[in-house]
Structures are given as structure tokens and as C-alpha cells.
Image (cartoon, rainbow over the protein chains, first blue to last red):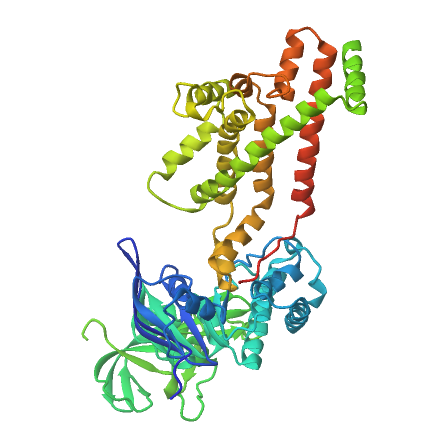
Length: 359
Length: 239
């Protein structure tokens, strides 16, 4: 079996007495993307710097393809196979060209090769026209693209990204993530992405490691982590909702407030459970009908709130769920608080967590 | 006004005729202040970097001392350097009193805290993440430091200019430790003071103008280096 591109083992790091991060094991597969997801202060940026060899952990080790860089020379060589984009572009004084050429000049590459690689990486991000522009004369989105081009120019094996979209407006953020996703796929780069935004984590796919208070709470494929959070508090952070509390009556159904919901066969679940649902898995409609094989219930609208370009509609019935509707649908239905709607969802959308009070 | 015009005329005359005494004084001035500034830079830059970039016990105390040193009265510096170099002083056996090295030492004491203090301030105002970004792009420790120096180039060259200005313009210290000996330790500032005392205002003005011209020429050179390099840096590849 091929060793992981990066493997963090028994790493613990403190700032004074305060625990910054404690990770028993975390692996980044070669050519894969791992998103470190967590709220502010969860230790994700510290972990990223430790993985990038920019900070030495108080305890533990980081292996690269199974090797532990021990000497300063080995560490420098390892660092040179990786690179990082930070929250701020942190461009150096000078032109875009000089910034993108920076890492190449550090490595002592010949001028002709530097020029070629700079051209290629600027073209890859569609910013070749910015080449001679002073770094100080760029917009936020342009500057962050230059920062990414500067990293790609060194042709790294691993790309670290520390919340690179934090200071971008919505369109620039979308464009940056779209460019990034395409590049990671095309170049087959190993990437570690830090964010506190679960929608960004989902858009990049790969695996997600959720950190909270410095501890690794859950790790796995992105969809699995987002749809199957390990605890109620993680569910809330990951954008899922606790729709209600029920009792598992068999391996394929759960009873909740007088209705029975079909489940994907569950194992090792019994008794009281919290029912977790994601808004995007819930379909709202006006009639009573539900799709084949779908669970459904009738409920009353308790809130209609605009979130971005969609309306978030909250429906209370045997379960309390939220779902998104377009403005067109809300207008067409003349939807207001108190209206009755039907919510439906597939059995595999339900995730059960043992009731924390009785677990 | 006539006095000023006469002084200006005499300055031009002294320069055009390449008056050997004035030429000697000017060259000695440049040598003493230039050497003192170079020594102050050699020690002040690393001290300033350490004070600006590192955290260690006693750092604030040292920073306070350096900042105080930026305003040292030259006469006091001259007095202490004289006590040091005096025949009975700790360095008296070196026989440096009333010699250019004594003047260099005195001006070094004046320029060093200026360069160290302004270097520390320049590094402190630099975004610390610049170093992290540099390392993340593959820089070695020394390359990252070089990058930071490049990013702080404007205030660093301003520190050198201030240090040189402090050395060149002071008169009290060189007067005490140099003694204004003709052909040996006479520099533009001490010569100007002497000419004023003797009532030869035209010569004093001429010497003052040459001093100003010298200061302007050196600072213009440093400014061109500072501004000409704006937006540039040079990086050393890893050996």
C-alpha cells in the first residue's frame, strides 16, 4: 500500500499552557484533498503549519511518504516540495512577475526557466495580462490569484491553503474556488485546505477532518462527514439540523411524534435518537403527495427568511425541518408564515444519533 | 545677505581652485563619518534585527537603552570617549586620543543607536507573516531574512541616512576627542566652528556650504539606491 503523502502521528502542540492541537493520526492521501474544517480557534491553522513544516510540534511527528525529515537539510528539501497560500495574499513589493518568480529564484533556477514557468502559471489562472502590474495595484481577487500562481509556479507536490477566500467578496470567492478545484483535479496535486465554511469544504470534495478545540472530532469522505456528523454539536457546525427526537422501533424505521419514518437499515441503534437532516435533502411541496419511497409529513410554515439568493423555509410538524425555495416559488405560492406544506425526504437522508441525554 | 553671497562665492572658489587644505578637510570628514557609519551599520543592523525580530529576556530594556542612545548629546559622547582614550584611561595605552580613529569611535557611538533603533522599528512594523510566506515558498532561514530586509529596504536605508547624518553633523564629540588639529583631525564641522570664532564668516559659510553639499551628495546616493530599487529585490539562490 502506498504511504500517505502526509501522515500526522500523535501530534500535540501548545501555546504556553493552552492546547492548540492534539491529533492522534491524520493522513493526507497522495493526489487527494483534505479539508481541515473547524470554527475559529479550533487549531486547524496550527495543524496546517505543522504539516507544512513551518512550525515544530511540541510532541509527535509528521511523515512525508513514510519518511521523517530529520536534518535541517531534509526539512528544507521537504518544504521545497510544498507551498502555501495564506488568508492574505502577502505579496512582496514589486511586480506580479517578480512575485511569481520568487520561489523559483530561491531555488536558483536559470532565468529562462523562471520566465517560462511564470508565464505558464499566470496563464493557468488566466491572469497573464497582470504580469507587469505592481503587486500593490491589484484587487483582492487578483492578488489572491497571483498568490496561488506564485505557489503553482514552483510545481509543488503538496499545496496548503489557509482560508484563502476569507477576504474575498462572494463573486471573487466563487471564482477562486472554481479555479482551484479545476487546477487540483487537472494537476493531480495533493492539497490541504483550511476553512470554517462547510460549503467550501463540500465544494472541494475529497476528505474532511473536523477539528474542535484542538481535537480531531471526525474524519472521512466529505459527503459522509457532512451527512453523517458524529455528534449533535458537529451536526450544528456542519449545517445539519436536529429535526426531532424519535425512537428506533426496528432496523428500518423510527417513530417520531406519531409518525413512522423509513430508514436505511441501521445497525447498533436503538432507543431514543436525535434525527439529523440536511436542508438540501428536504423537498417542500404544497400537495400531500410524496415521491415513491420517500418519507413525508405535513407541517406549518414558521419562518421564511432570505439567505443569499434563496429563501430558507422552516416547517414545524412531527419534525422541524428547514428547506430552501427559490424566490420564484415563494412568490408563486404566495408563501407566508402559517401556510401548510408537505416535507419529504429519502430514507438515506436521515442520520440518527443516540440521544445525548440518555446515551 | 552680502555675507552669504560672499560665502557662497568663496565656497565655489575653494572648490574650483581645489584648495588643498579644504580638500583635505573634506576628505577627512568623509572618511571619518563614512567609516563610523559603516561600523555603526555593521553592528547596528544585526542588533536592530535582533531587537526587532526576536523575543528574549531584557529585550525591552535594551530597546529602551538604544532608543535613549538615539538622542545622545555629542558633547557627552565626546567626554566619555575622551575619558576612555585619555592617557590614564582604560584604552589610553593605544594612544588614539586626538587622532581620526578616536573621532571615528566617537561618531560610531553616536550613529550606532540611531541605526540599531531605526532598524528595530523598521523590522517591527514589517508584517511577521512575510517571513512565514517566504519560508512557505521554499526559502531557507537566511533567504527569508534577506527577503525581509528587502521588504524593509525603505526604512532601513532611511536608518543609514539618519546614522550618517548624525555622524556628519555632530561637532562636540570630534572637537573633544580630535582636538581640531590642522592637517590631522580637522573636519568640516570643527573647521567651521573655528572660522566663526575667528570672525572669518565667509570661510565659515563656505565650509558650511561644502558640508551641506557633501551631506546632500551622500544622501542623494542613498536615496537613489532606496527609491531606484522600489519594487525590487534580489535573492540569493541557495548555495
